[in-house]
Image (cartoon, rainbow, N blue to C red):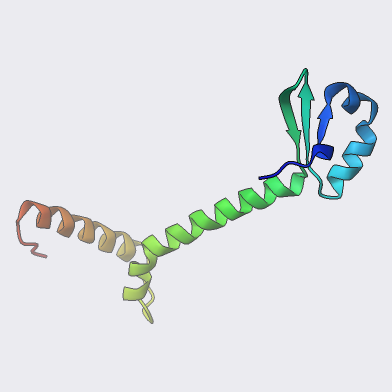
Length: 107
C-alpha cells in the first residue's frame, strides 16, 4: 500500500491544524501522525471501522447459518418446536459419538 506523503502529519502540525484535519477525515481521508520520525497514530474515518465490524458480524452470522443449515433442510415444510429441535440435535450428537466408538445407534 502506497502512502501519500500528504497523509503524514507531524504531531506539532496536528495541534495547529486539528480542525482542518478533522474536516478532511470527515470527507474520507486518513492521516498518519508522527513524532520525531516515528509513527504514533493513525486517524481514520469512523464509518470505516463500523463497516469492518458489520462485515465481520455478517460473516459470523453466515457461518452460523451454514452450520445450522442441515437442521433447516431436514425440517423443510415441517414446524418444529424447541423440544423437538433440541432432541434432534442431541440424537445427532449421540449418533456421532457412538459411530466414533463403533457402536450402532438404537432409538
